[in-house]
Length: 495
Image (cartoon, rainbow, N blue to C red):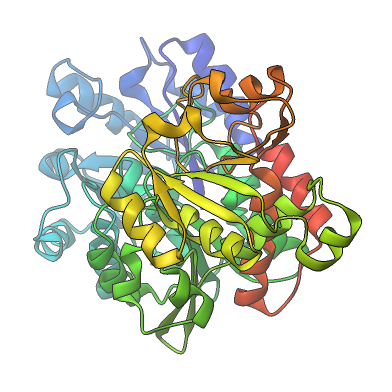
């Protein structure tokens, strides 16, 4: 069940939002603490879905700052009006009583806006003593692994009193999206961006159209993106759409991960079926895996993980995707194209020394290119150059180099830092090929500068499409149409 909270400050706006929410939600929460002089009877008349009435005090993260008597009086009125649910805070439970014949279900709630405490089961047991119809435990996630504690709480409490439980904050997004898989009685979604009642609340449009949450059930397999940041990624749009169109009962979610070892260890409890891996974990994740594809092992970077009967295996689909992208715009002679894809002998400067740079460097060396690695950290560039059997250089020497192809394999210029560029535009020369592996935004500042200088420009989207298709096949055994991925991807990017 998806519940939309109404947090409007005036009755006029609350009535409009209630009508709109009723058209898309399974349930509507009337947050009376947010509404100035709320008319509960009128609001109930406008709502066509089951209603939760809440009058949250400041001490529990709400906005009601009047007397406790006035606050509880509105909840008692809700009971008199036989609303579907009344949410009462755990420390006020004894002030609100339902008659034996009442049809209203009492939700007894606990909120922690600071952390996810260690004693969740103790809190649950205490709330059970209140004879609640439904228990609500909502905490703040300081780490992605806090979601696993909520998952374990829901699993241990399953089969007794129904529980609403999830984590707030960006790290807690997955517990909101995967509420059916976790076992929560319901989840909350905002009416639209800017209408959130708690940190990390996702809007209903995203819940329904990106994560397609109504399709989920206990048998839904979970896939996701490991990275930091992950909020910019269009991978959830791509893979969730493909899963739906190709008939898979799967969902793909973003995992904002700080410490990769802790994440992999804890999330084995959820039996995640596959991962995409992005910055900054493409190299560090290797130590957490049970095995690797030979190409990924050679490159020393993983962007795809497949769960095979509980064992995690790493692959690299970036390498071939990048080479295919570059070969599609080469300017070599017909004979060179036939033999080497037009990349043999080309002088290539790669900016960066992370996972993407590693994949491209090894791929280009295999095509006979003359590769030089440039990075802010000279030691990292020398290390990669040694492993890939190519050259390294200092960024300050870049303007003096003769370059046929310049590749940005760093996150510089990625959304939201769209006005940043990794190099001065004066090093760009007419007919130079400039390839930026960033796909969001569609055209980075580097590519705008390169276009103005008469360069041949390549954005990151073609590479993204190729690597996403290869990932999907590794997970499902099915090859998705590239043109379909491209259409979904370009539609999903911000204008």
